[in-house]
Image (tube, rainbow, N blue to C red; front, side, top):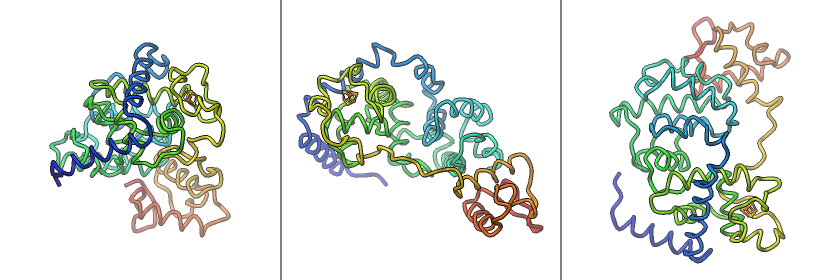
Length: 320
Ligand code: SF4
């Protein structure tokens, strides 16, 4: 659905008011320029600069990288990203493959629903967008598994739009440095959009993510090395009081314990199915729950319901 021009004008005015209520817009823009210049001058960190998705503007590759980088460490993402794109270089190649092949390419990544969503997104791209990733926020947000961060990241990092992105790293910087307090999602988005220097969407976005990942880190921010230290509200206040990043928009909290969780059993079964079908008598063992057949049965049903596992008439499980 296309939104009217008046709606966009209202959003823009609302965003400006949201920014001004937090900090003078001129200061916010100056922070944005400082972050961009730091990224340009330092090239951030050679390991992050060498991440393979930073050297492409292919929207499909950028989309794949952003979906993969959610919830998975970058060291594990890199080989999976290269393998995935070799197998599925286009949305059409992905959509044309069985989900089982996509799940095999996803090995080592965890959170297998993301692979299923990417497969469904590829289907939608072929069916509704001629096999291309659209350069449109509303259209991107209709794709399975694509939320506000991923959609904006595709626009900034593939299409070069001047659009801010807020992940957990950016969220820390915004709350600590720009606001000095926890932010609501709409406030964080308004602030980061106001920080993007004209024409600098790609460079600024990468620099902001790097700043949060390398300098303004969660446990012990390295304020002495920070390019925006003089403008940082939290540091200027002596970092007193609670960390503004705690509870702020997009800033992740500690993950639930993996060992012994249902998620671990789900992952083990999908891993086993990547190698071969699993007969009913081996299901509990494949999940590491030999003594908990009831739990295994319940989790198998949830995997089937999610479309990640198929069961034939003999009860044998396999990838779809
Ligand atoms: S000065 Fe410290 S708290 Fe402020 S943005 Fe930099 S690293 Fe983060």
